[in-house]
Length: 470
Image (cartoon, rainbow, N blue to C red; front, side, top):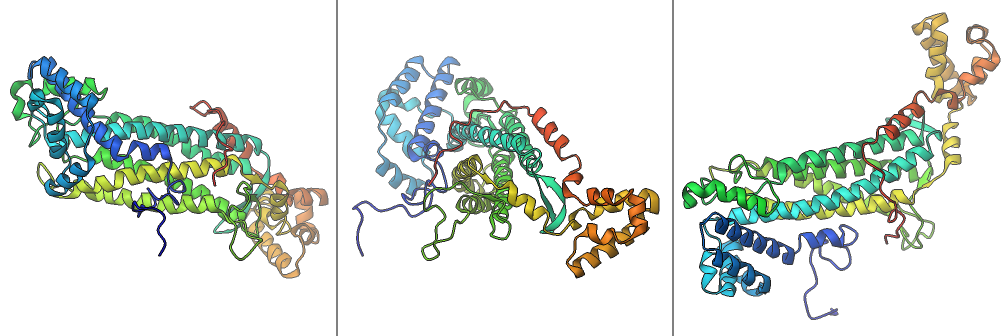
């Protein structure tokens, strides 16, 4: 066995030097890194000291000393790890180190607080940054989808139901449907913030008994220090907002997976309607030189499956006992960072894939014509219905479709041999016009226009949309 370096290699995809940028982004990993986590813990402790000093709970000189000590504080991570393994939580070991760094005034660190107050508030602060990053990524993907919808508003292609030709649509219509999901996600993220960005400071059993009559006053002051909202009541065991955050990521990655599924299927050799951006060797096979696999879509699919499982875990974690839980809370330590990292990675893959998507309009048209007009059998039926009645029209067109399939001929050629149908449609030219898929696009274009005109969010610059992601 060969050794790459003396220090141990990462054992998960989130920190792996090989896989981490395929399943995440460096910016999101930074938000949830150990260094950032401890920094948030210390930030909350300092803000608490300031809030309590302003309320007259601890001396002002103590708050100032805590702030100075925190600014120069260098955490001993080895010691923190060892003591956390013993205690079960990192806050008591961290408070010990911070108090030592502060000096005599360190006895006022963590005054009246409980471990979960500090950890929950730190999680909220990290999620605030994480949501800001997710929003920026959402806006870029949304802008790309709007551009695709506008560019291909009138590019006809086969609409498919149950994996079979259904009716003609346009690729712009498909992209607009994709974009509509992201419009809603951007609205959801604003709604989520109002419920999520809430300070946690309620003391041991949530009653703030340790601070007497000043508890709510300190809570509000702490919220202002951190630019968060105060809670209406303690949320130590009311975890719906935290679960909602991960469920929101499940919705986002679910939408990405829907798009990835469509693109993967459209990339199949038999369809060949789109392709992921070309980068030399991307999607290559070790044995089949011709391969160009949908790697970005596959990464999106894998990430989205994990996030959806985490969403289910977070819903399970809402079931907590009494005033402080005996284990469900720990699920969040796993699910929150992993869900945000995977979601950010999936959005980055989508931005690369959609930003450079190769659209083959010619192949779309050839596929649209594969059935020789059968894809617009409904158009013929609906045109005949006012003259022959809907059911009789359905039966006649159904019989013509069977004949076309069995003979390998086009639907128009079969219909032209039925004088009653030719007369009902207004002549042979009308028959051929009704059998042309492009004549039966419905309101695809109008729907695209509604999505484009109703977009609530300004299209963000696409300066990173075409970056190579390898």
